[in-house]
Length: 478
Image (tube, rainbow, N blue to C red; front, side, top):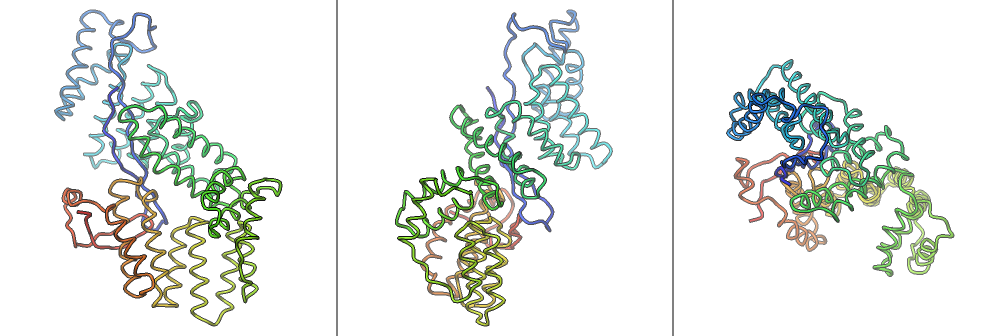
C-alpha cells in the first residue's frame, strides 16, 4: 500500500491563549490500486463496467490523464479530466478509491490561491461533498468521517466548530475501536483534552476515550508495517503525554491508573523518599482504598523511611497534608496563605517555587507554573532554582507545542537554554546542573540545514509561539 509522506504540522491558536499545542498531521493513506475481483458486487456508484463502450473508454482515459496532469501540477487541465472521470465513473474499477482524495487536493489548491471568501467556502463545501460521495460509493463511514474531521481540523478550521469536528473524529473510534485510523489519534486527543479541561466533556466520556486512545496506540504499534510504523511512533510521542496531563484534573483518573504507573516507579527505587511520597500521593489522589496491598505498602514505606519535620506555619502543615493526600489545588491555596502570612522574602520565594513545582509536576499547568516561578525569582533575584524550573518547563513542551519531534518541538530548547544559562550566571550552586542540561538538550536543537530552509540564521532573534511566547536566539545542534 502506498502512503502519503508523513508531515509534522499543527495548530496555532491566537496569541492571547495559554498553551496551543501543535498536533501531529499524518495524512491518510492512498487507496491500493488493484483490479477488481469478479466476486466483488457492484456498488451504488457507476463503475467502468456499467458504462457503454465509448463512455468506458472516455472514463478510463480521463482517469489516467488527470493523474498525469496533477503530477505536473497543471491543475486546470487536471480538474477538467478529473470532473469527466468523476461524473462518468465515480466507482472507478470497483476498488480504486484515491480519486476522491485527488479531487479534494485539486480543490484545495484553488482554495489556497484565491482571496475570495465566498469562493473559498464553495471549495470547502465541494471537498466535503467529494468525501461524502466516497462514503456513498465505497462505504467505510469511520474512515471518511476521519478524513473530513482531519481536513477541518488542519486545513479548514474556520468552517466547522470544534464540537462538530470532535464528533466526526469520535465516530471513527466508535466504529473502529482500538483499530481507529492513525491519522485521527493526535487531533482527537487534543480536542478530548481541551474538552475535559474546559468541562465540556464529562469525566466518564473522557475516561472512555482516553482508554480507547491508548488501546489504539498499542494496537497500531504492534500491528503496523512500513511507513505507518513511523506515524504510530510519532503518535505515541504525543497522545500519551497529553493524556498524562489529565492527572492534573481532579477526580479524573482512578486508583488502577495511578497504581499501575506510580507503584511500578516506586518498586524500581524503593528507598527514594521522593518517589515514595509521589507514589503515595498519587494513589491517594486516585482513591485507592486502605485494603489495596500496593497502597498499604507505600503507606508503610512513607511512615518508616520518610520523616518530614513539622513546618513552622500551620498553613504549611495543611499544605503538606493536602499534598500528601493528592489534593493539589488545596495544597496550592494553603501555600499561598503562607506567602501572605510570611514577612520574609526568602521564605515567600520558597513557597512560591513550591507552588510552581506543583503546577508543573502535579497540576500540569505550565503557564501558571512559570508565573509563580517568576514571582519567586523577583523576591530572591540571586536564586537560580526558579529559572532552572522554567527551563525544564520549556524543555518539556515538545509534546505541547509540537509532536515530540520536528521544528515546533525542537525550537523550545532555545528558550530552555536561555533560562538555564541565566540560572548558572546568577547562582553558582546550580551551575553544574544547568551546564549538564544545556549539554544534554543541545543535541535536540534544529540543524543548520533546518534553519537554512526557513531562511533564518544562527544568532538572530526568533519568537517561540505556543504557550511560551518568548523571543530567543537561534542556535543549531551542529
